Image (tube, rainbow, N blue to C red):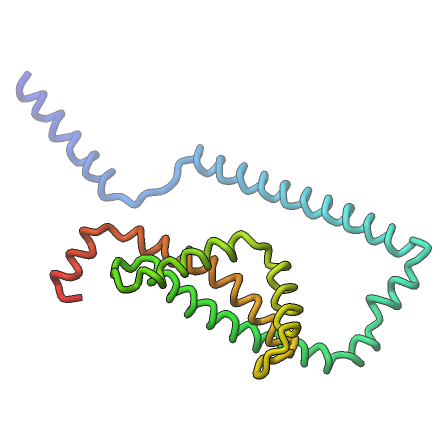
Length: 207
């Protein structure tokens, strides 16, 4: 019996080693699942394409056959007029991009300064910390449209020498005033998420 069991174990060993060393291949069930999944995905994509075509085609047909289509096309889809005013559009885009860069940079710097003031614990900066807190609370609570109206009409009404009445400058200033309050809170929340132990570890390393 011992010899037979030894022979059977010796015979079983090569089969297990051959299965372990062989390359893996998916079973027939897995291949069938993949084929079914691919067929289902193709069917779903076809149904989505057909439904989108029907919906968009119906909307386009309703738009084209409407009584005021000619007026709408001449007003909003007239390519000749679009190319005619293209230089003005490019000029407006350039102005918008320039003001965006100026406002974004100013908002980031002012917001960082306000956040550092509000997180500072120095007694000498207490008045500035109070002013920063009041600034953030006030301009986060006032709608931006109201700030634009206050800056756009309020500053020229003061008639102070040296203050510009340029609409672009005043509009950019209103955006900076409003968004710097929001960005300062974002930066301050990020600073406060750093645990005091991490700050102590950084100081111990000389950072």
